[in-house]
Amino acid sequence: MLAPAALLALAAVPAAATHPERAGPAPHSHIHAAEEMDEDQGPLLLRLTYTGEVMGNAAGGIRRGARYLDNLDILFEADMERIAGWGGAQIHVYGLYNNGRSISRLAGDTQAVSNIETGVSALRLYEAWIDQKIGQHVSLRVGLYDLNSEFDSIEAADLFVGSAHGMGTDIAQSGRNGPSIFPSTSLAARLHVAPAPGWVLRAALLDGVPGDPDHPRRTAIRLGGGDGALMIGEVQAPLGEGKLWLGHWRYTARFDLGDGGIGNSKGKGNAGSYIRGAFPLAARDDRRLDGFLRLGTASGRFNMFDRFASIGLKFSGWVPGRDKDEFGFALAAAFTADSHRSATGAGPSELAIEASYRARLGDGLWVQPSLHYVRNPSADRAIADALLLGLRFEASHSLFGL
Image (cartoon, rainbow, N blue to C red):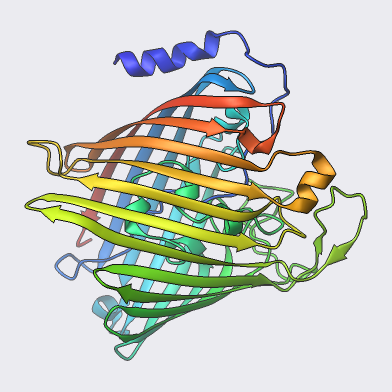
């Protein structure tokens, strides 16, 4: 009980800097609700998951203080084969609520130390799609779709609350309203092919501008108007006991060049690539150590960051008597593009370091303290390095066989 009180007390601490509050971080990945139906359960699934988080900026950043952020996932799934005889079909509907509080406005970072931050309070339809299996190895998914639910996503990084360990900052920063990820999604068509054990080929075509940037609280589907499309492909391959992912993405629309508006010009070619790996490093009895790393690039002509790197370690079952607990350490670094530095005088990078521990309290109940250090927030030379403390809790309940 002392930790939440200490974090909330930070809100009363005088400001450490006089910078105005920023608008918040770029769109980013978050704790996407699970979407796998168990054949042993009924054909319908309703799952509610509430996540609350107290996070405080203890030193540096724009100013000290604390915020309470929350996230409510409402997930409904239906196995249409068991319900109506529609072979290989699944319907998925996902509602999302966030209170809109922002810790990044205090820390001043761009990569977002909390993956449930939105900056706007809203209850919205987040996903609504139909997935159709075609034979044993192919599926097609169509509808409102979170790109990071499958692309650029690995289980080993799910422990961490910093959003850069979901979808990499190189792609998460892109687009006029981000790609189709938290908190706004767009219409998409996704093809999934599993040609051999351990191998997966994914490709997706998405509306280039998710939601309505002028009305961020709305769930909006707007096609045309120069939005263009986002095209992405990914290959997942086995590598020893681990996995390797290779991906490439590209927008078809024209974007403002990253010259700070000096040239007032637009161009095509907003694209990037990434490589990601996850590897088991040690395993003994119930103890397991997993590592992951990621490298990514984005066109520096259009984006603030043109290179990204992350690495992390996750320890599972290492605390005696607590085989479900996990803890780990991770680092994410985003490097500014030459054009952005020339136009703004920004520094070379933003570096985020996280230490996190996730403890199971009971069925569907978890608590997770975390510690964050952000060096050069937003690569802004005027913002001091930030030290943040967080305490997250999660409660989940599922209804089966409705």
